[in-house]
Length: 143
Image (cartoon, rainbow, N blue to C red; front, side, top):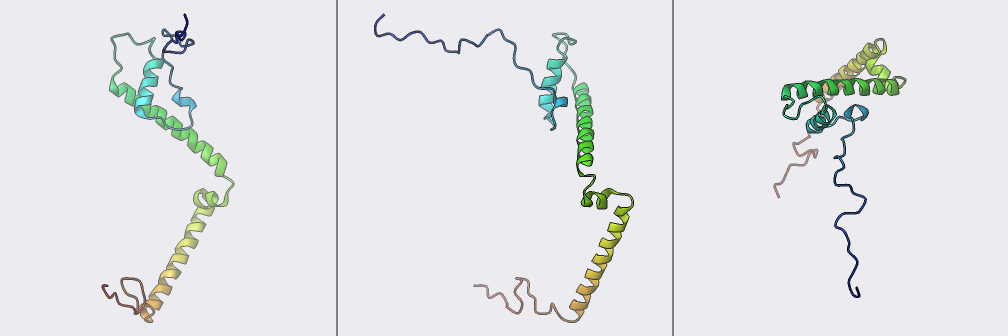
């Protein structure tokens, strides 16, 4: 036929209408936490064979499974975090049972010294000229 374009289907020809919906990736293989609704969809897809068509998974079971998943993910990520930062100085100062108390004592001593220095300066009148607007000796004119 002259002047007529060839028929173009609405969907690309490689799309199979009977193909199953794509599955959500397993949350246990991801390195970030997934939302509860995502987890529920994945859980229903994964357990579809064991669930009857009319049986609905109760919310308590889903919540319990999600809490187990979340706790497992947090444990895995914490282990990776510890392994990654174990040799760094800040990590040792904060979490090492020997260095931690020593570092805390140094910080406490330094803060006490800063407080004493501040009180000495305040008693000596170092801060008498300060105003609420932060400028020493200049009063707010209200303009």
